[in-house]
Length: 285
Image (cartoon, rainbow, N blue to C red; front, side, top):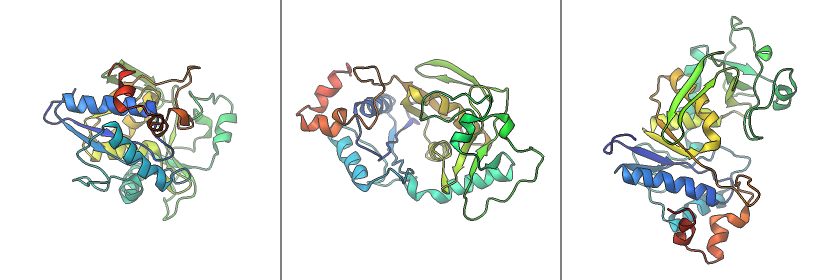
């Protein structure tokens, strides 16, 4: 773990639904690690998903987190030296990073749909339905072809060209050594979407770096995203934090919890009379 004096952790919920037990356990682990290190905890509102974002979810998110016992030193409600803390207000920061990637020739425009990629020959799906399908090299443009300008408004995906065959690795503070081969285990991925919005991968990496996060605590389902984000950190010359990927909370059928599991949302559990202490006791926390 980072030195106690300099440790900076973060909570990064997305207001696209009510927070559930899985979020709570991961966030609680993040808070405990920050507390044990004597460091700071940052709350960031990851509200880039305009299609699913709703103001009432953002308000409920803050209320539920305070009720559960979360406390943060910086955030959208209290400010701090790295404001703004809502991603929807940081678009110019992401755009500047995109322009750096463009200037280095590390990205290219892609009009292929997700279905095009999945149906392309030799393009098996990577992991679960929320993950990126493996982008086949056959769909790439010639690396020597002139790179078109970004334009003021972006209407196609811009993908980062991964270094095919290179092993990307990191030491997870929970899982131990992790590695993946670029171009085999994950392919070229979007850093800017055709709806003129930064991708999760770009926004998350840029924010964690600029906010000085020293350890990213999140679910084990995001290990593959870590490999992609390492390439973004590297391309932008940013410091790579440590990573701690937590086990996922599942339902009775062993399916990972999602925001559609309303019965296990913090809001629903609260209405049923469960206290934060009773919920945490189920984890042995």
